Length: 263
Image (cartoon, rainbow, N blue to C red; front, side, top):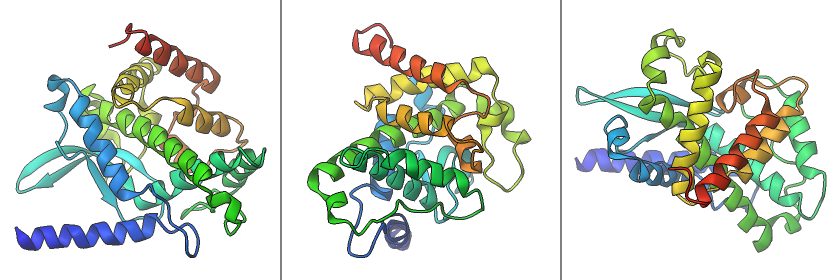
């Protein structure tokens, strides 16, 4: 047991180094630990009938630079566990997206330009970082408070979306269709009704953890403007989704929730 704990601690340090290195001398307050905590918090707020269908430690972090978030089935000591796999590269990506959104407050247009740059880079590997990260204004307390707030909102919503694929039965239905040995976006297989059910259930789960939809809506709006979407966007939203309507739905669910009309 001690060896396992030491191994886990070592892996966490390695993953943190991969995911939390935005610029020399700088580090993000959000990373692997916060992602694991978000998964744990989301699990704790699920209804007991749904908790039975998800592993109590729902996040599995992978040391890959390619951005990936996906429902998986893992095994440990001959037991199968339903989890959400999140790559270090995905944590990196969301950190950079959230930083760019925060910087937009003092430099309007920065966020859109960064997302446009992401759209132009479709090759495998880590997406580019936001430009001019050595500018000290980009690391002020106000900017970084916004950055971690957006990170919590986006990561919570995306983890909760992937948890729904386990307890709404999507992974059971489509798991064998996914490419063997690879983390393939399940979103590309969902029907419109399944996707809407996913968004509603995930919204409730995320709102229960006090994470709103504004951050994800900003990212979705940016994705909708991409003339050609990079492969990682399919882990976030199905290709043919009407994103304007999706953002309306997210706001509608949020309004209903905070008026006590969505549970």
